[in-house]
Length: 377
Image 1 (cartoon, one colour):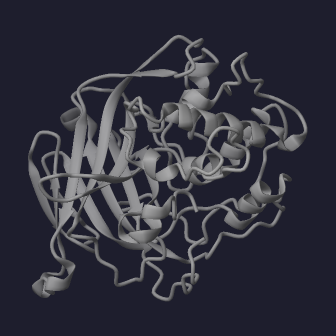
Image 2: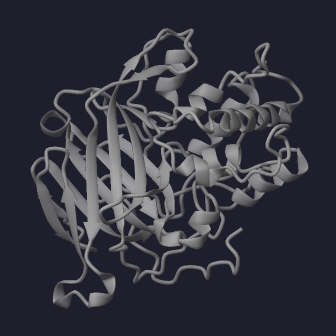
């Protein structure tokens, strides 16, 4: 459940719940960057998008820092914002169905119809929205059992939780040369915000599972053991954390990262003299890092740029996160043994219906998805 059900507010308003975010160079059209935001866990195949939300992608240029810096990249200007809004789903929307409107960073507007696989295009962008098969792969119950028992609970034959569930997908493909003004290294975050004169950020997602695997568990945190921290974290600007709660996030991450590190009985990430975990700052820089000048790769790009920066070597891949990349094995392996041991596999390696290489990439929605659980936790 990458970012599915990632806090009380997401549970209360699932339409605004971002389940996953992906960013990768287009496998079919070089020079294009694909951005994917999935929302609404357990979406029915007839689901429409909310007219009460702004669906937003924010991109910022990044510059490498010294390898000794715990945050590998410096965030620069300008910010590139892609905002999508939708017509009232209850209005019937005539024969054409629900309408979407994308505003580009330059202020250009592209209109499109929900569920139109060709999408709308113009001004250097192409956009699709509609229900799709949820591409996220992980044995979520085994991960939660690991946290509950303090012992790795993954097996060779894991299963995708509620396999065949759908999400509402928003897919934007951008022509980098035209829209990103020559920027090559970008940070990507997706957000849902209230729509209207005053926009409140409800959710934001960069990397998968930061909230559910690294911020949700309370029992290891010596400072804020009773604090549900995820809604506070969701309201933050990923590129510039406010001062107020940083101590709380760091205490929670230091404790939970140490828990993951200890699962194999050895410490691969020793804390510093103040108890700070060496990966805490990297986790708090919670956005996908993409080199838009490198070609698409199906597997192995997730976290590669961050790891290369930390090891003071040139990166080899485009970074980001592709739809079929088995990112959770890399996530668990990094935290448990720093790559100094066997791959920590959750027993799930690919989706039942993987994404393909052509726009809009995600597999069509399951017409007969599993019934959602009574309580999503």
